Image (tube, rainbow, N blue to C red; front, side, top):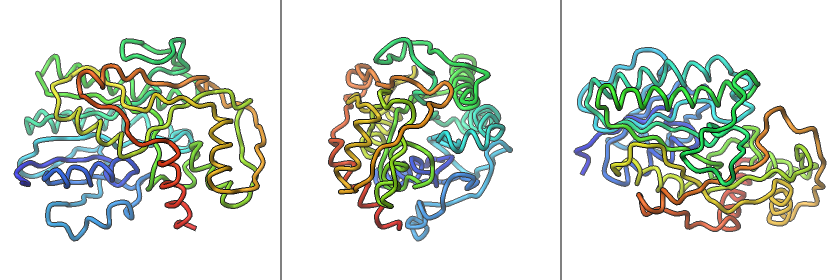
Length: 312
């Protein structure tokens, strides 16, 4: 136990903090690196008394120094919600490019296995549905969302270059919409926005006509898939997400029902390049990792809404 060490960049973020928890549960020491640009120290403060956990405040676009042995590196540093990466476009591009370069350099130096957090956004506004890993995507590189989409696409490209050229042990996870405790109420994504509006008795804002679809995965399922990928021998990208597809309008109605809110749905113009559909094909995750989601959306939503209620 605790004879292995993992570095988690973005470790005080929503997903990164849950990942820190899981790695510690698996008997792996954790070094959390975060500059707290969009992360929150509260997400990891419960670990500060743990001798197998340490926190370094650092921007990974600068040289990363970690003393001692490192076995695993999980690169989760990046603004990840539209409200963040539209507000922080340069930082988003830098952490996807310079930050990933620094992380891969650290992995090469330490002889560590590195897992890169990519995203379903590499598929853009997809012409193929559901999305399989061999689909190359439909991305507008100069649109407002391009700063995130292209940062992640570059991240995948440089990771595969290090794998092929340097023989680095690499893993790439393409993460689809995920929800659960530790999401920020104001991060601009559909679930926290809808829940915040419903709990405050405000109208729920749906962009477009609400017919666009998303597939929501509960955070514990996602973290389980990521851990299985880290421990697997799979070097090509793997989709991790819940294939249960729902329209945004239906999702808003579910939130209203579970919260018991009297909120009404109002419609606003659809943002530029907003994907019309989003659903992972998880055949590869099932066959290579033996993974599929277990938490039903209604159960996950109740847990998440209870968490948000405690934030008020």
